[in-house]
Structure formats: structure tokens, C-alpha cells
Length: 352
Ligand code: PMP
Image (spheres, rainbow, N blue to C red):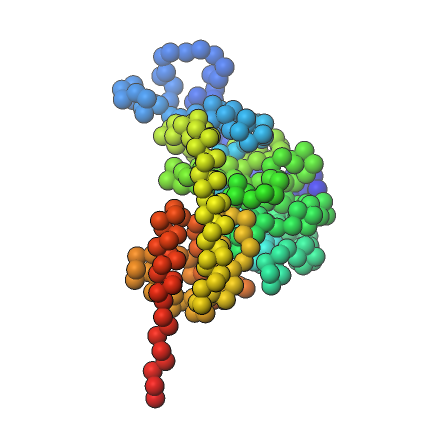
């Protein structure tokens, strides 16, 4: 890895961050708070939340096996994705390299930040092409984006390939593991000591069933974490979200139960879809969704919408022609989908 200072935008490296009122007295006991221009009434919502979410991070540290000092929390993983650009990529000068197809926000945030985005296709079967990714790198490449299990293909990327990229690329490698709870692959967040250039993303939105509270995690070295904390909005995770997240972490057995149910449903739904006449192939998945290549994805998508069933039409995405991305739902929802697909009849072409 290059020295961190060479990877970080100079305006960020030299930034004096905003200092929160609560940060300044930290570590002392107090009961009269006249420092932050809050209204003294309407407790507890009158007070600014903990800017560094320490109680939540200390619980997460136990659950995730990562030191609290290496955890960043943001308004969804999307906040962490945007921060990566703002910390490392000089607009109109630097570039990033990413697998394709993958999660759309990496490219959207590149556009918003005016950073060149180099999309490098996966192999036809959606496996990682580490050679092609490394070949796309130049002196201005600051970040490589990997997503494993990948959205929309569902497969976990080959660990050896990811490790090779982490070892050979001199910049930052982000491994988005939003769906890793559904995979048997060992998570990369446990390898931060081996890879100083690694940032791993996790989220409360998938297995932890809390998309509405908008809470994402990034795991990285203390040095990279300090940069995230410098650039983030001072109170980026609100009090309601912190409280609800603590509640979620108090009931891990419930989460494990959801996992078992969803994996069981996945094991039933995939082969059932695969054998439908409208399905050409389903791709192996390590996530709570799968990609299915259909006879006519757009027609089937609209047919399902008319029946109140919404899947994601990925037909226009690279390598995904005629593909639907289907999330694993409850047994009832999955049966509704299967029932509708079984009844589907293509509209005959009009006779001339
Ligand atoms: N990463 C991946 C791979 C995703 O698919 C998604 C959302 N679908 C996200 C991140 C965003 O997660 P969050 O809700 O935490 O912003």
C-alpha cells in the first residue's frame, strides 16, 4: 500500500474538522448542559446524539469481532460509499476501478463526485477477473470496488482473487459485504490486520432487517477510520436509529432464526424457479436474492407487477440481459411468486 497521505486528497489530509460541543468536555461527569444551544425541555430528544455512537460500537465490536476503534457508522452503507470518494478521490483527476455488474451506488457516487469510474466486466458466469481489474489500474486509481456476495449476481467472489487484489493494488480496496451473513465464505472484516488498505462494508438493512433505520457500517484500520470521522457530518447517526440498533443487537437469536428460515426458503425457491418453462437459468447465490435468466424478463416483470408482485428487472445491466433479480421473501410471498410464474403464458405474436 502507498503511504496513506499519498492516497488521501490533500484538502482532507489538511482539514481541521468541526469540533462538537459534546466532544470538548468528554470523559468528565456533568449534569448541566449549556454548551450546545439545545432546548432544555423534551428530554431525551432535545439533546444531540453521541457523535461517535460509542455504546452502539462497543456492542457491535462483540457481535462483529472487530475493535470499536475500527468501526464507522453511517446513514446506511451509502454514506460510507460517498465518504470513500470524498476522502480519497480528487474530482476530475483520480479514478476508481470496479467490477461490473455490481451495486449501482458506486457509480452514482463517482458521478456525483466527478470521479472517473472504470467498470471492468466479471467473467460471463459472474466470477472475478482479477487480472482484468488490476490491468485497469493506473497511477490515478485510488480505489477498487468489490462486492461479495455481489449484487445483482448473488455469488461470493473468489477469496484468493480478492486477496491478490488487496496485495497487489497499492490503493484502497473496498469489499462490500452487505450480504455476507447469507454466505458461508469467511468475512473479510476479520482480516483487517493482514490488509491495511482494506475497507469492509456491512449494513443493518439486509439480514438484520432494519433498512428503515438507515444504518451502515465500515470496518477499517484506525488510520482510515480517523479520516471517516473527520469528514462525516458531526451527528450523522440520529438518536432513534442508535436506540433501535441497540435493541436489534439485544436479540441476536432472532436474527439467526431469520437466517435459517431465509436460507431454507432459498434452497426451495431456486430449484423451483429453475424448472419453470419461463426460466432459462438461475445463477448460484450466496445472498438473500438470486438472478434468474428468463425467456422474456421485461414481459414477465410487467406480468408480475400486474399481480402486485415486484421483482427487479436487471435486463439492461451488463451481462444480465433477460435477467430478473428476485429477493427471498416469506414462504407465503415465495409461493405467491411461484404460483404467478407457473400461470404465466407469453402473449402470442400478432398474426399478419
Ligand atoms: N451494498 C450493497 C451491495 C447493496 O445491495 C445495498 C442496498 N441494496 C447497499 C450496500 C446499501 O445498503 P444501506 O441500506 O446500508 O445503504
